[in-house]
Image 1 (cartoon, rainbow, N blue to C red):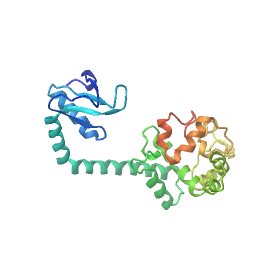
Image 2: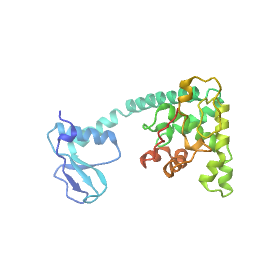
Image 3: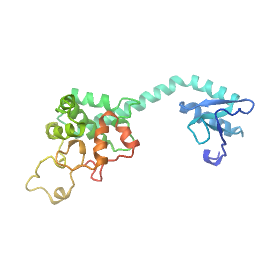
Image 4: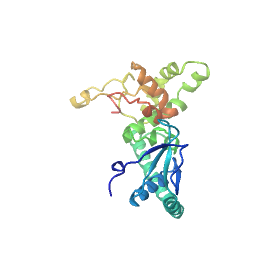
Length: 252
């Protein structure tokens, strides 16, 4: 079977009359959209992409009613199995995130770790644990530092006092770095003031410390980095959607 992009799928406005025997599959249900599209192509019939108006927002696809009915029946019949599969997948993701957090912060109290995991892995939140654009290590470190900032630093108190968000974050960064070290994070955060140990290997001396704007008190941030670290706790996924990435130093 050819891939989807090899088929011609005309684009039509929502207010246009559908072909006889066709109906709209509204966007928002990946199972219905994917399978209705696939089965329509297999039947040798045309899939119509529907937009709100010419050049406007995508609203869904139009497919034959018979195809829609068959896919809807399959959707209902497999709902339980698919839900079980999602739970298994989510369980594996959460276990991996927990393991990575414990490895990076081995001295963190378990109740704190559980709070980090619960918040970062919340479904449909766009938070750091769910993003696919960061490594497991980066997600773990960002999630814990965000938790420390909001729970174990003066950040929230400063905000309530009217201190601007960026200033409040900067004033909290030393406390964040200190708590991270207490919890066993061994990587130096650039700007934290931590000195390198004497006698360290040349390789260790050459290693660049992590540049994480949210926990680097003396680090001069670019405008984009400042926006990243402001967004990362409330909605880390949004930072990536807006094109804000960690600087080249990344997470060591």
